[in-house]
Length: 424
Image (cartoon, rainbow, N blue to C red; front, side, top):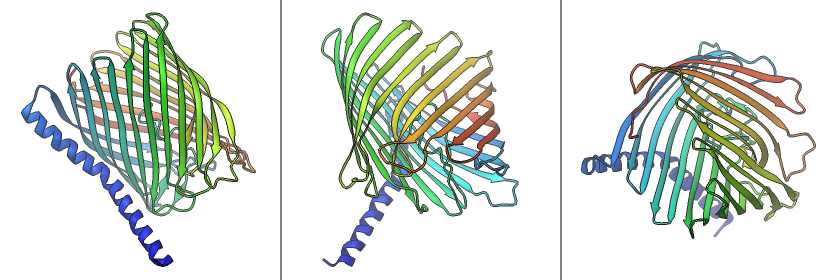
């Protein structure tokens, strides 16, 4: 086989794989809706199903998070979707599909628009002493005319982009981004006190039509763990982790090894503490001869609590995450979320996030440290149990070592939202 023929065959195979992944969210959404429709007809008591809708209009200052004064503009967003849920004595399944659009208005420049599609799924199955869990998300977005890879703070539990997109990149061309997140796990109780478990975390970041600097990558991690109940309130354990980071372009392949000690405590009936601390080791793999080995600490501390009319959580952690540039970043992060019912119709909430991130394993001539802070309070007014009027504000701050000045941005949105009530 000639070199040209082999190269053409390889490109054709890459296009086929890309096409399959691009269609995956749509296929999964169609299968979800079809399965829910059929199952609902045959077993209406098992499944609950409903549509979702959200539309917002707002104002954004310094939309590029530029150290110099950036552009301001009005922004409109809209999203439609569907959610399905099934609950039995031994199983919980929740599926969600969504598609949306956003665009900037009121500027002489064409600031572009964005479309996105996503499919999410979560399942838990309990049988005797064994629990199976599966969480997954497939996401595709497409920016036209102007690409802005910024921080998405819509879900504080979504760690897909934590620390990966702090460098806003602007491009006058269409860019399509793919993200996949998959976490199956299983745990088994050997006795009243002792349990063992295993899990996998897979992350994919992919780009189409991107300028230089964007790199497709896979990140795989496998964990085995054991936990022992010290008391009715306290549980301790140990985890062993192995992983691989494989960017599409060669030279940055890395293998990950680590061990962590874990601790969990129920402080009260309504609050709990989860902590872990350990060490990780990064080693160059394959042709990554110019990478350095790296040893460092990892860990997390999480507090969850709830009252009669409020729910809150705070997390502090250090972790390794893939980036859009095809390297691994070490990220120190704090996440905060709280929701409080002010009355029968009013609800207040706040989301907060702050992190510092730096590249690891690769020697660089400049400091790669990046800092980002976001604070997003909001208010909801219930027109009905399903319909809500929303008011949201968000402040964003970015600071990059080696670049003079800092960047701030303010976002204000008014919106209307429909969320179905499914089960308890």
